[in-house]
Length: 179
Image 1 (tube, rainbow, N blue to C red):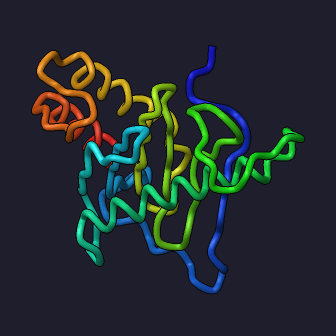
Image 2: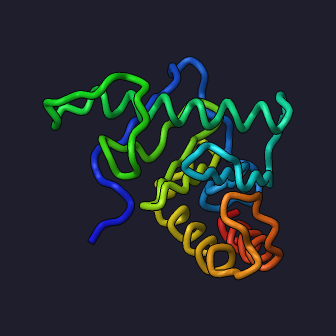
């Protein structure tokens, strides 16, 4: 049984005139985790975590709104152009988790956005170095940490920002293995 969608991936590559920056020193595999977002199905940002973000251009609230809007638009767009489904919904209509064509990542010359949506509608977005490979396994591991240390925590109220020390500790330890 597959829980994390199927279908095709959406890839957007910037022009070759602007080459990708070299991987930062100490990143043997190039898996340079920069930012993690966790959204619930209603678009509420439950977690925003930065590790190696080189430049902050927006305040965090505006950044989170723009990221969720981007995800909403990309999911709607990929469902609309899905060549395997004859019945197309209207562009912009919300989709249920697992519904429609899903995408896993897209890449620019400066970053790669990796995306996973769980069956419950939790959305994980990991921004990495553009030379980073497929991060679906990484996102599934982070989701499993979320389930283990947040969802199973009797003190956590669903839909509220994640403030679980054990989750943060294990997340940081795991991300350090990626660098």
